[in-house]
Length: 200
Image 1 (tube, rainbow, N blue to C red):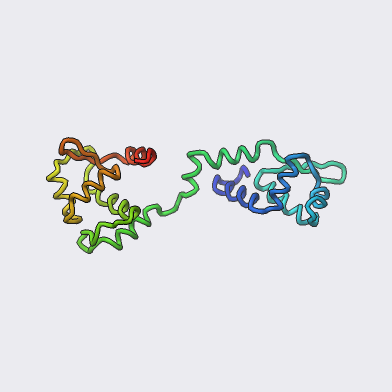
Image 2: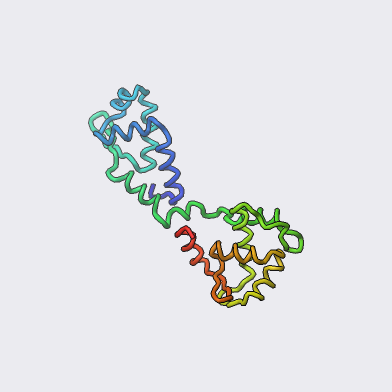
């Protein structure tokens, strides 16, 4: 799979394992090297069917073949499953799988449903995910590295909804803003991520 992209490698890997007989073949090859005929007899399948399964497993870089007399003998590649699992679960690999996906689509849908033409909120959503989408929209009205007194915060929030107290409380509760001694400031995206990761 060296000529495949990481996404294509993962697809081939999952496709290879998404069949009960291919899983059985992996299990058998984990015990000993076997020919197509041996595998066919053990599994009660036609040799042509086994050959097809082995081709899929080979494309996924899970098995290799060598010629012995009149037969091709198949071997489970050492560390193949463990290596692909590590690659698949690597922190840098997982986000790349979703490359090209519009991650802001949900927020836009929510905002389309709850915003009036003038940009004010029809309601403050009670559902958590919808509320978070609204709060992400609102917090963009605040600049990074700027300290805001509560009066100014209320003036900005009033552009979205008259219940500024609830919006203030939710922005702080969702770790989008912080407050100390009546002064508010917007938290960085990395701080938001750390807060979310820690369950905050």
